[in-house]
Length: 471
Image (cartoon, rainbow, N blue to C red; front, side, top):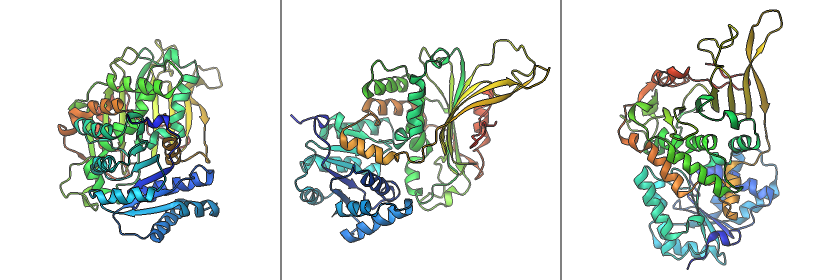
């Protein structure tokens, strides 16, 4: 019987499939450099691709990637990283590629395989590792999206479980390793004042915005296979919803947190056509790799309900998109107004009531909005925020944290099989059956139809960097 990866020691090699791809260039090599500076990367790093590179060329690409990501402030760490690099060239469909990988691994017996490759190749590589006998005591790290729908996610889980046990499969979502995201979980359960109001009796609605001011850039071909709903909402935004909506874990451990998060996904009401607005920014169809008549959404807004005792009837509004007014990520938990309006200006029509704000990006903060009386004899006031900034310029990059955790067998910041499938079940009804995309201007907040979706609950808050969000 195969030994569980969780019982094994730290991984003794890191194998990076897709070493010449965009993800490796933009995120992974800078993360490996950060790990080298911390002294947490002390194993061979074996890149696998079909790019016909020499080892010297791969090392040059790695150094250029680190330079592009920022200042090289530790030359010794960079030299260590480059000296640890190895390269295997070959096609993922060719068994000889995996034989060559086995030779490159040498004495390593507990490798971690990182699949930074197109999702269509996940199953191919996992099967190849199994057939070559390279999965014993190994771990596999799978990039998102994990599947394209419920059926493909189940099939990918089945393939992965045939080769690796569940505790050796690390489904990565870099959002979960951001300090601001981790702080949502901490803030909720480290403070007692939230619990009495954190339910349907006091919360009017919840909004989550994840906006980007740029377009698909060089990722047009990938985006054509995914779209905003698959690429961002079903994973990143749903994970934030789970942290906000989950019940208190019954014990201190990531297994309990995973269980409560899965319960949230399972309580989500499956989406209907009227719950979703899909948009496409002007000029998307002219991007490289994009079909001339593409209907892929670069923006989506949706209304979600969680059919649980705590959240029954509370609408959750999620929106995300590219080429929007600014790059930001923010949560607004809007509270219900006081039951009686004792002061004329205490609940202005159309104005926000008390709310709690979690700012995730570009800067991290938590704020509570409340009305405060202005000086004078009149009982008149204004909305103010109690504002807690939590900037951490030296925080560990998400990919560096996740790679280190996976190699150590720590699954706290990764997602489980049942959670992935439950999340896909929520969006499954609208993946194929939906309204056509609506065009929107670059630099706007998306199509007007998204405003109509939330009009009955006061409208969207527009994130601002250092002030209270505006309507």
